[in-house]
Picture 1 (cartoon, helix red, strand yellow):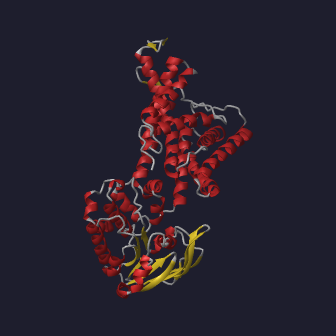
Picture 2 (spheres, one colour):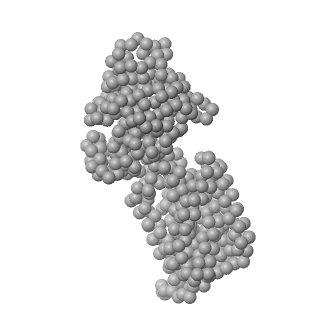
Picture 3 (cartoon, helix red, strand yellow):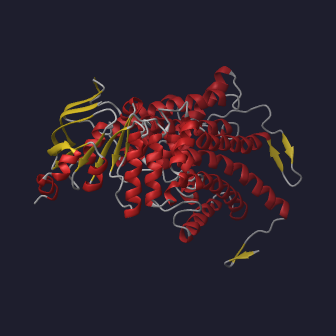
Length: 300
Length: 233
């Protein structure tokens, strides 16, 4: 096969299909990290620079729960998700919200500051050593005919879907979910029906961190933990959020899968290091034709 | 019922209200008239707890509520329909109404929903349509409907006739009159002097953050000072 004069390796369909499938698995994790990011952006109108640091922190929590207490990484979700929510709630309510005095540009910088503090504390306390969890079933899986899907990949896909679905139900069915949506577009109107905006901001931030904590549980069985791991995923999650449309749930989900598949196919054809540029290429292409992202609406 | 004494308020260094005193009795329609920039919305938002006044007192049924947070003010049954409606544009009419009972009237949400669509049948026709797609008049109905969902005891209406067609303005004032006849106390903040005075019991005229004229609505209608104060002649 040739592209722009370069000759690309040709693969059989089963290889291409296999790469696509593993892209879907990877994409589901990107989607989950991006959902948290897009939710916080949609409601607080800030880009949470601390998202990656919080992912890393949650991955350490999962790691230590396994290493010290012997808790399975997936089971650890029952601890780190509520823990992540509480941590995020407190962080927004008592640190980020208090420090930023309602000014978006300050909030942005405060989240950046929080990220730097968390990352350096992790470096200090945990060192830069990579630590990994090996679950006994990490190479077991299901034969899909064209490819072999291991349980950690399947868990990532199913977990991300269930969490996104639960979140969607929460946002459309419960009063708190509706209040979050109300605050995202009409803060003063929300105050006038008796919604405590500061509380809703903190709840939103908490949910965003809970998503990251869930993603951490799903990642730890396949990715080694180190203080810089968060930035790797969050850089891609930023791309996913912008690609899907800032503040859009569906956009985060579709964008996550799109980026995951693109990345894996890129790696297949262009090699491990060059393959990653396909993310940027598709990103630029989508924004050329749809400046608001795939599912974004005009701001205002 | 609601009693405001010597209220001073503003935004940071900018002073807007210079000692406002007024009362709203149970079952009354009290109109607050004044031109743009007189400070009417500032007063409303200080009552509703969006902003905190610099000094002065706001009392509700004898209890001091000055500087209370907006949730607590809603809990008491003081509910505002703000200028510009401020409905939730990204949500359906049904969801907007449901959120009206976010704090008050949650237990009777279903009954109140039925009651509101009885008052505004046009809302029911578009129950699952997004509020942002409604016309100005429909949004105004939705904003009032949302406030009614919280079973208000005092309803603050900030320029409900703004931007409506003359026919709808007429309809709006008839509705306000009906709500009042059903026992609701109403604080009607308006620029529409004549129609407001026709349905109000008492009225205050505000200019540059001060009350310059007040009295029984019928008397004010005849008062030569009204024209002078209101038009600034």
